[in-house]
Length: 213
Image (cartoon, rainbow, N blue to C red; front, top):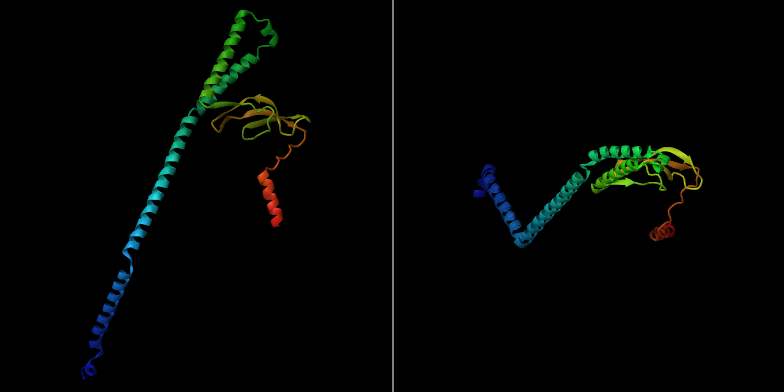
């Protein structure tokens, strides 16, 4: 009788209560299904991963900082060194301007003067080398546009093409950077440079590719 007299409005609170109770039971079941040990393991793994990432980032930052400091120390004198090369060039021009005949017949005063200029040039280059500036001596080497500046071509059939056969002005580098490229003359008309012989590993790799094909 009571069920027959219950209106839909009276049934709505009961349905809502049952739904809430069911949801609460499901949530409780889900919480009970999670293993606390597994949860701790997962959290520990996440924290470890974060720590490793932070350590890797700090190591990369340390390496970048060290490289920047090294580059700053090494290349900070580049501008000054380039200016000093002009002084060295002028000293060399002064020495080259003295004819060999005059050198051979020079009196003691001129000989002492020339020796003093030569010593000054050598000491200047020694000091530049102590600060990381090295002289480029490309004579006989293959022309490299990264370190050499071609001024003219020299017909020469005895050496491979693009071989440096004359150095007009010496070049210099500081560290891995070119301070001043060497001005050179390169050969023309000679045989082409022979290709580099393949290494054993390259031969094996080529054979492997052929077999696969």
